[in-house]
Image 1 (cartoon, one colour):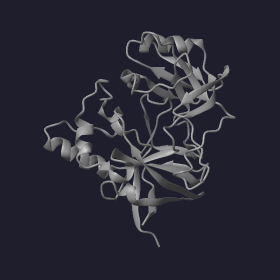
Image 2: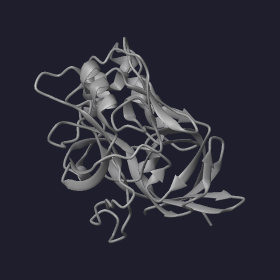
Image 3: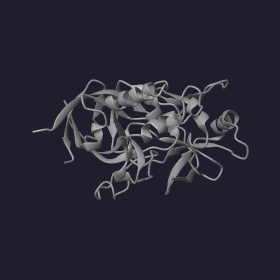
Length: 286
């Protein structure tokens, strides 16, 4: 007996944290989330992670995946490709409160990043999550379950209902603002068939495939910073989205933080494949 059902309508990965995403029709699921999601990271000369919070035009770095490598594109820059078999110096990098091991992707892409990002006093390196590295989601939210992730903000996947975005855009239009795309919220899995923000109340989401069961546990509301205010096309920030969310998405359960979408961990089905159009069933948390 299940509480509700719906359909996966979109899948996204963001190979380099805080750069542009890629929409996929299918994606293999790993314990750390969708394959190659946030597997690479831009750090400064001190090994500190960087995002659109500090450098909004990171959103203009557009990754593309081939069978052999990751290609980066950006305005007024020649493309550069980093082969998947690139191996470099293992170094420690810091992301939020975690320090993890990563492989440096070399000088050529570092120069490319320096040229495009052009932030005084900063030198940039592209690193890849090391094969033997391990980063665990907060066990406070996973009830002690050790759930790995790579360079996400803390959890393997982010799930958002399409109706949540529709609700936000209805409110933005009522305020005389332009509607926004789902890109603002950088989800991995977009679902339909549920009311706006019904993901807040889900405990477990199951996808039945011909090769086995995928199970995702929704563990923590996704608190939002300034990134949803950044237009991915112009890299300009305006407060319209945050102001609209503040009127109805400041959750008391999260200390008044603005929340949109739910963070989830992979509890079954690593190695199986998700695809747009897959039905799911789910249980409520209460």
